Each structure stands twice: as C-alpha cells, then as structure tokens.
Image (cartoon, helix red, strand yellow):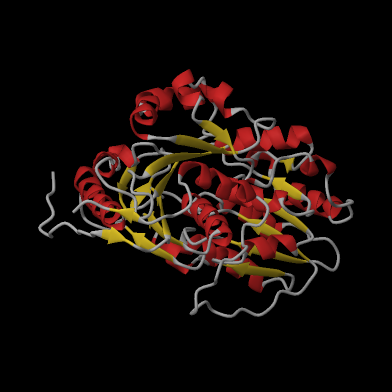
Length: 419
C-alpha cells in the first residue's frame, strides 16, 4: 500500500459549475480502448462545454490523437501483450507486479485529486489485473467536484467481448459481476443487441443486467468537436479515387497489409495502407519497399484522421476492431473485414454478425490472399453504396451518451464540501 506524502486537497466551497468526467483504459494493445473513450469525451463536451475531462491511459500515442476541448491526457507506464495474450512491462525493466503497483498508485492519486463527478472505465471492471481496485475503494470517500456526491462509476463494454464461452469464463475469473455490484452505478454496452446480444451471450446475472444500458454503436459523429494536435505533421493530400487498408494498431495486421500491397487495384485507383503505430519496423519497411516498386500504392504509418480517410475511400479493407468497424458503418463506403481470430474471437464474432446482416463483407484471414482482395476491390468500387442494412442499425450511440451522463449526475449546482 502506498501512502501519499502530500497533504489532502481541501476546498470549502465549490463555486464552479464545470462538471468533471474521468476515463480509464488499460491499453495493452493498440489504441482501441482510448480511442473509444476519446469519442465518448467528445460527445459529452460537445453537449456541455462546461465539462473538464481527464483521460487516463497506458498508451502514450494517445497524446498524438485529436482531443475534445477541456481535455487532458495522463499516460501511465505501459504494459505490452504478447501473441498468447500474456502481459509484461512495455518499457521499464520491472516485473509485472511491480509495474502494476506503480500504475495503481498513479491511478489512485490522479482520480482522487481530480475529484470527478463520473468515472467511465473501459472494459475491465477492476482494471488490468486489479490495478484499479485501490482507486475504486478510494473514490467511495471522495465527493464529486460539482455533485457533492461520491463519483458515479460506469463500466463501458464494447458490443462483443469474445466468443460466448470465453467471455463467460473470463467474466467469472475476473469476478466482474462482484465488482459491478460493489462499485458501479451503470454498465454501458456500446452496441446494438440486434447485432450481438452481449447480455444473453455472456449470461450476465440479474444484479448486472438491471444496470445495463445499450447505447448503440459509437459510430456517427466520432470526430465532431475533436481538435488535432498543434504539431501534427502535414501530409500531401491523397490522389483520389483510392482504396484503403486499415490494420488497427498493426501488431498483427502484417499478413493482411502484405496481401493488400500485392493486390491489383481497380483501374484508376490508388491503394493506401495505414500500418498503425505498433507494426514491427522491419515489416513496415517491407511494405514501403513494395510501394516504391509500384506507382499506385501509398503507405502511411499513423493517421489521426481515420474517419475522414475512410469516408473518402472508394472501398475499405480492414481488420475487425470496434472503432474502425464503427467508422466504416457510419459511411456508405463498401467494407471488407478480415478479422483477428487469435488470441480472441471478438473480431470474428462481430464480423460474422455484421456480414450476416449485410452491413459489411467478411473474409477469413486464411483466405485473404492478394488475388482475393483484388477481386473484392474490383467488385466493391462498382457496387451501389449505402447498404440498407447499415441504416437499420443503431449507430447513434454518441448522441445518446450525454443523456446517460445526465441520468447519473444532475445539472451542476453550488455544493458545499466539508473540510
């Protein structure tokens, strides 16, 4: 247990009416968790500009992403995930328990000092290996900045956790139901139950389901109100029309990117690959070497305007991560999902359901060859846009989030805080 040497912060009267919202994401692989939280923060600030947001993340790349106004990012020492799903320190020469202890101390200090009115935790109710538990206990004795009540806690879950058997097992092992019962006021599921019913698939108990609120997919309006970093490099505009390949963070998207790099593109189209910030440098260099040999391929490592990039494409080949799929669903651009199938089945489950509904196409990674991708691209760019199936999905989750926040925390008011 770590005890701070700093004296407690004491405020006699809170006169500001600025609400405070904190977000936590453990971020061991890719930027999916923190990107989801940034989208949520953007929706909340857009609805109520008198809101300050603190984003806590283990992904240092988050500081390079567009953010809403009034938002600060605090990064904690990173944790890396290996191919088998195991964890280790990403940078420090520390064993995992020591690193998690450090992260837990930083999280507890930041959250209690910030005095949030609402805390939104992404996916892992107790934090990575329980690192959030000290903060959850400490927050029970903290008064929110404007509400004068203990901070309201929300667990945010993507539409699919994993295949049903694995999701149920991990939910039980992690004692997630117990954590929700003890600490959380609400559970937001960022999906449409007509696509995947997480409550039924995971067998959630009644004590949890009564706190569940399906928001719909966080799809439309993802970039509304976000401000790009001041030092963001300017890139030469892409020549249109182009077909696009997105492989998430890039750790495991090499084979799909390589097949796309070798594919034949529709006549008059340029191919664009976004490798992601985590692709192994030697593999990224192999893609750029291929691009040098052909005049119709561009390779970029990291972009902050993925929504715009997808919206202007003629067709998109992508892995099946939550955020990129949402960005594709919010457009009328044909999309082919080549999902990750190990160590989790989450992307495969999502891709199969959306393909069955006709919202996206799917190709198993074992079948995603250069000829197969080239054949799909040729057909896709000539396909009528705006799949009717997408219009039937609940894609307006971001528009519903401000009301969900208001249900937890009333309008700010003058609150006396005991010294």
